[in-house]
Image (cartoon, rainbow, N blue to C red):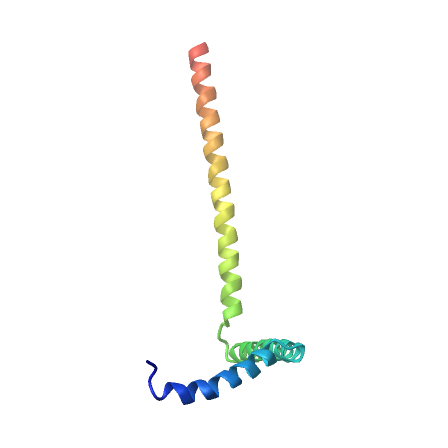
Length: 105
């Protein structure tokens, strides 16, 4: 048995749902949603740019500055790991060569 409030709710909700579903699936809605998304991205980008300029005017770092420094540090860490591996390979090769020379002598 359904509660009394449910019958009037269903009477109103079902037609509204059908209309809204057809609207959401229409090409016009999709075009408007896409345009709204583009406008939002543009405004967000403009606000980030203005905020960055304002922070730089006060001598403060922006998020973009921090990300650039983090990327530079990550690049240096990669290079350091590569150099360390190369040094370890050379040391192993040198030790192997020294050991083989000692056994040959």
